[in-house]
Image 1 (tube, rainbow, N blue to C red):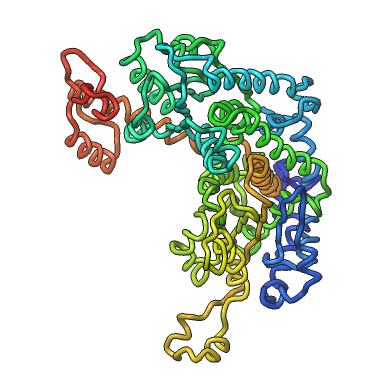
Image 2 (tube, rainbow, N blue to C red; image 1 turned 45 degrees about the vertical axis):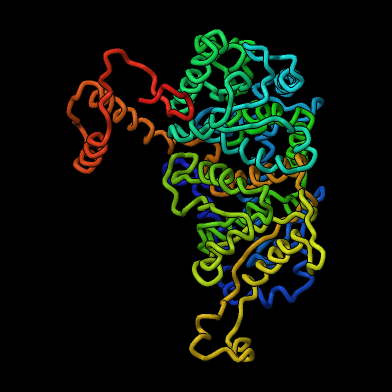
Length: 585
């Protein structure tokens, strides 16, 4: 945020980088550069102070390049940025998304029924629960078989069509829940697929081996105008109607949208539209009907309700805990320290749990779309970089992919995420440890390997040939943090989600940016409209290209030369043969 009362000559707030707290941290970097984690880790009191716990989650910050004074100085920076005030404003419904004049209330989506969270003077929690109750009833109808398809068959397969936050968040939660024993039992005989990319290959994969008679389609688009989503929706509608007729749409397609007029024009009964609100950003929408509806159809509402309760556990902690023991606050401050003061612009998200395989892609959007900004809330270019380049893979797959770089190449702070009790237990007679224990041995070892490294002296003692010593040395002093969950259930999945969501918000508030808009995605989409118009003219009327630069014209021409002209006497639908036999041309 901005320095309280500190204004520049133009009357705009001075950036946080001009504050005394920021300058103090800049000076403090010199102290940290004189330390090494292999020495800092020998201070048990320091380590104890940096291990925090809340509601079953353990967060270990001891392998961050910080000492007690660092944390104090970061908390001073948070005070300078009025962080606590910003947290309160979010939960009070203040329009903190200033460029869009909106509240930011994704926490309200998982609030208990008796909670009061106001937006523009009205408690939004009852409206949230109206939608949740509607989802509960509808999903029970589908799962019990009381709602049947147009030919009288139960709808056992669901295709959720959406993109961005309407896809990445629900996919993350689905992937995390599908091997949890209770969820797996609840989902027996059911399939949930996601269709996001406008690439027709994604359509073919999403519909592969599905039967129109037993498929329910959920279209997720707040305005019902999102270009990619609506093209995919029209494509799947054609897949439905080609086999079942136009009348089948009302039985086989539902919507998550607020544009009831376009929903009705599409052929969907507006009664089967599930709404959400403009104070729900796309990347924060998994706890709205966007995620809750398809997940409830797959697993039953009771399991999804536990997911919401887990997220609320962290919401309430974030709202009420003192900053010095507040998990999302401390995590966010560590990221600010690494990015803005230690010069580490990337972060690796490394869950040692295959069920969390889609965590990193989701957090990529939550983090990079939120904090990938270049100007302040006042619209002034920032004198420092913001955001992190997020990537990751589950352990131990990542170890055989990019860990070489994080051990001996660039310094990339790492988030190690471990689970105490696996969703699936395997232990083979005669093996030294169970399969999950083997996985977690790597979880514990990798963090220490990054912190301690390996010295020349250690290699000499191991009689490593001199020529190989430089290649086998590890500098260490590479920071990481560890998050340990008791298990991976819907509840803890919700906790993990909220932990990252609020951590991202903390970073944005410290930097003084708007973490809740995303204007950077607009330009490419608008330019695609120009390409679309000319591509249509070229493929249907053989009109020449115009108005593009040389490079784009060359590539577009090469592309069009390899395509078939769409010059049909009677226009017709074209589908891959494995999706709709007889439609390929």
